[in-house]
Image (cartoon, rainbow, N blue to C red; front, side, top):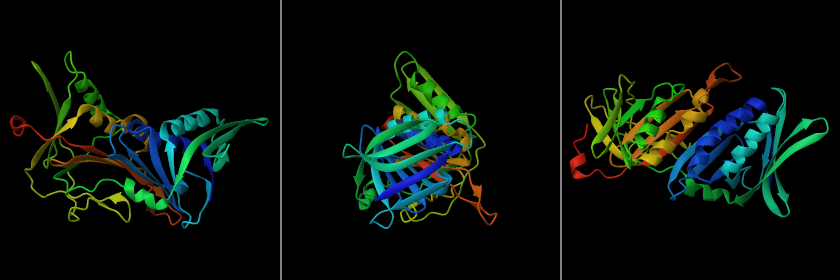
Length: 319
């Protein structure tokens, strides 16, 4: 088994920006490398639910790479994402210019498998981070795929991530009044409205985004993403007046929108899907690039999943 790769300073910045929100979901994550892509699955730290899933082309992360194994050039690792992110930030701050290079490889340190991340700080010194990891069977990655959900009832394109107003609103709602709000209500309509509301005794707050673009994608029969391609293909109904409200734990909802901190400049578009009584999904498409033939090619995506909580009878009619 062998993994070696080289990255530029810009690629290290890109990778750390993707890993940052995933590391907030879980201290550890599962990485799967194959000949062309890296996939990352992060479970929530308080449960076994997959809350973050990312897929990125390797040629967007590395200027050069080599992967070989007995499993058709596929490798699966379990690693501490917070340590991985910290090592990338350390390397990025050390790289002197755009032409500087970071090196990654799998190696053993005192009989412990490690992902080694290193760079030369000058002509006579090297900065190296050895991150302990666990080598897993590639077949185990099937246990860490995103949850299958029903067809979304509402699907809306989110406002530009360069202005992270949604995350800011959620943070303020989380501290509503003198006590924390346990839950936030998310309301979406097929006429382009997205609302967030929170209530405590004697106080309430509501924020509504209007005139959002609505996506009426074709449904794939309760298969919101295609397993064989590991990407979401959400669909929603065609009811022009449909309105759906879901109830979500505020801390989990805030974690789902942490990507707006580090990834804002790396987003092509982002979509919020509401699966009634089941799940809220945020699908973030990474910037496309021009391939060798001049045609735009996909870089990858990050998708975040947040389970909903059953509405109380007196909450069913909230709007």
